[in-house]
Length: 253
Ligand SMILES: Nc1ncnc2c1ncn2[C@@H]1O[C@H](COP(=O)(O)OP(=O)(O)O)[C@@H](O)[C@H]1O
Ligand SMILES: CC(C)(COP(=O)(O)O)[C@@H](O)C(=O)NCCC(=O)O
Ligand SMILES: [K+]
Image 1 (spheres, rainbow, N blue to C red):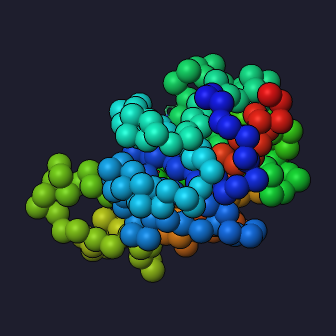
Image 2 (cartoon, rainbow, N blue to C red; image 1 turned 180 degrees about the vertical axis):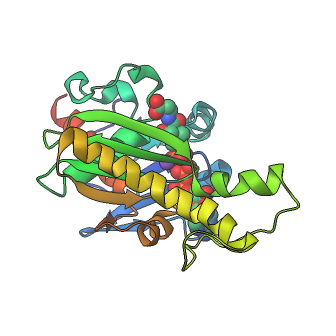
């Protein structure tokens, strides 16, 4: 991680570059304020926004799951105090994962943000371009999980491969099994997705016991409504994790 100059009491701007969009946020009191007023931000729009607000931030903290985006932001913001978090900034003892060099840092960060908020182990569902369902124990050790197609990707498969079929809403039909084309498709989309997620959660329970369930990412609300489990929807979980890791890294310097 690159060094930043001191003045860390001034506000930091956090950037989370996922596969679909880049999100930016800063702390306003205890809450997060998003700068991505519209949902999608391209790297250049974001750089423009930052250049339009030169005095607002002491430094920028970036995490990215895409190397091309990371490099683009890095070169476009070369004039800015930029701190990049990568998986090599994560203490090795917090990673029960074999290929740390290819781990998407957002997966660790979302879990690390979640365990900061509760005293239990956590399962985090990050419903973005990909759907990840990951486990972190109460000592902040990340144990991995799974990577599945995100809701949009999953819902896009049949319309692409079997275009004669009608499009359906992501909702569970009232009766089982499906007795119409629409209901059969709904069971195969929303129903399948729901059952898969619930099955994964059961698997975690069997392996590790109790946990708190957190949901984040662009499709968090849809997933919450789909599954029969108590859960906390936290849109800024990756940012919480970034801030926590930034502070930990700074304190150990
Ligand atoms: N207003 C919206 N704009 C864009 N995507 C949205 C919106 N509302 C929900 N989504 C969903 O959020 C997903 C992207 O989630 P996000 O967490 O931003 O992904 P990533 O971290 O991969 O960039 C999209 O696949 C889409 O299904
Ligand atoms: C799984 C992900 C694509 C999720 O990214 P997102 O849906 O948030 O854009 C990302 O964490 C990633 O690129 N992971 C690399 C593979 C791994 O985590 O092992
Ligand atoms: K994700």
